[in-house]
Image (cartoon, rainbow, N blue to C red; front, side, top):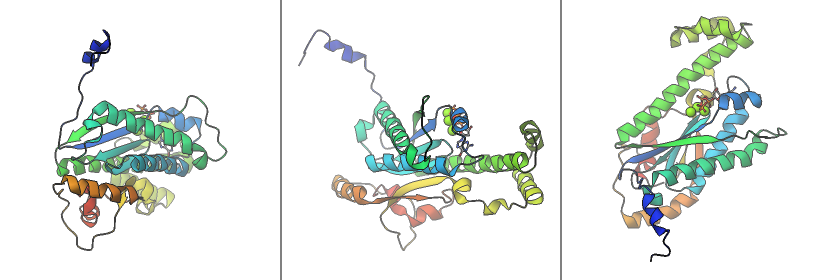
Length: 272
Ligand code: DGT
Ligand code: MG
Ligand code: MG
Ligand code: MG
């Protein structure tokens, strides 16, 4: 098999298979999107075009990589979840991360004009970084997703209050920052309500909850526990066809409480 005297350089490649039987989360994040969002004049604090474009790119990734069971996105980031049973790319970290990052970026750039109509995209172009983390239990995975969703809520409440103080309250950004220093959620809710007549609860779920993508294979009538069942090889082959056909759904809903998972046991069972 030795083709040439150069063949030995292969030995320098490091194995990087991720721990077996663990949930793999690949999180991508826009590089320098603070600057990027300014350059393209994203609406503050939230731009509908930007979130729709992020979700379109994530849907593209889900449609190309059938082993993904779920994706959760907020702001310039998206987390993609592989089931513990996945053997895609022999679970090699660099292949998984680089494939997701480049597939996402391609779809983001490809779909730009559909969402930012009439806005020309010019260098420096949008780019994303990515990392993979393994979680050994469903509990850890759900805590990870809860962590991202709590972050979404905290940031959105802050940003909503901050930009109301600036845009409607006529404050400069330095004063708005000072005004919010040391405040807790209740204080921000109160500022929004008493000064701007805004009930934060009535803000759109897409901003409060972020976006969750998964494959719809039909709602289960019986709520069941979200414990993954062991998956056999024949079952995997059978399910592969189902996965390809299943539509990717986007929801803006709570993923912290049990209800979302109990109503859709197939997500964590790896059957879709
Ligand atoms: P990084 O990730 O270390 O390369 O740096 P950034 O600048 O991407 O920072 P990051 O990821 O912590 O924060 C995301 C930035 O993207 C943040 O400055 C807000 C901005 N952004 C994301 N979505 C929107 C939006 O819908 N509207 C506006 N105005 N800004 C947004
Ligand atoms: Mg980052
Ligand atoms: Mg970023
Ligand atoms: Mg970010």
